[in-house]
Amino acid sequence: MTTKNRAEKAREHSTYIYTTLAHYPQIEREAVSELIDWFEKEATVADMMHIGRDPELKRAYRRLKSDHIDRLKGVRLFWTASLGMLAAAVAAGFVIGGL
Image (tube, rainbow, N blue to C red; front, side):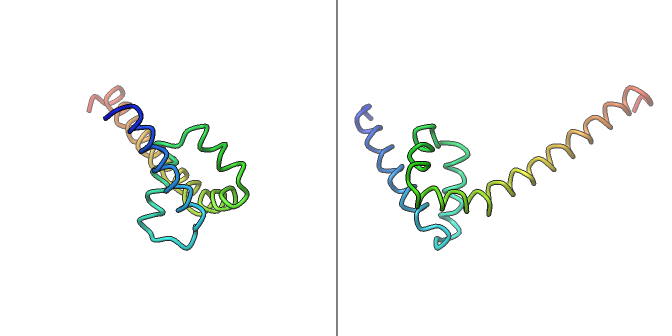
C-alpha cells in the first residue's frame, strides 16, 4: 500500500469517527466500543484539536468521555492497584516466610 493510499484510508477513517462521534449517544453499542478504542489507541493530537474546534464534536466527546472513558479508567486503576497489591503480598510472603 502506498503512502498516499494509507493517508487516504486514515482520512476516511477519521471522517467515519467524527461522524459517529457527532451522533453520540444515539449510536450502537459496537460504535461506542469503536470510539473508545480509537481514542485510547489511535487518536492523534491533530484529531483532538479538530474535535476541540468543533462545538458539536466537543460536546459529544465530553459526554462520551464522562459516560465511558473516565469510568473505564477508574475500573482499570482499581484492578491494576489490586493486582499490584497482590503481587506485593506474594513477594513479601516469599521474603518473610519463605513460601
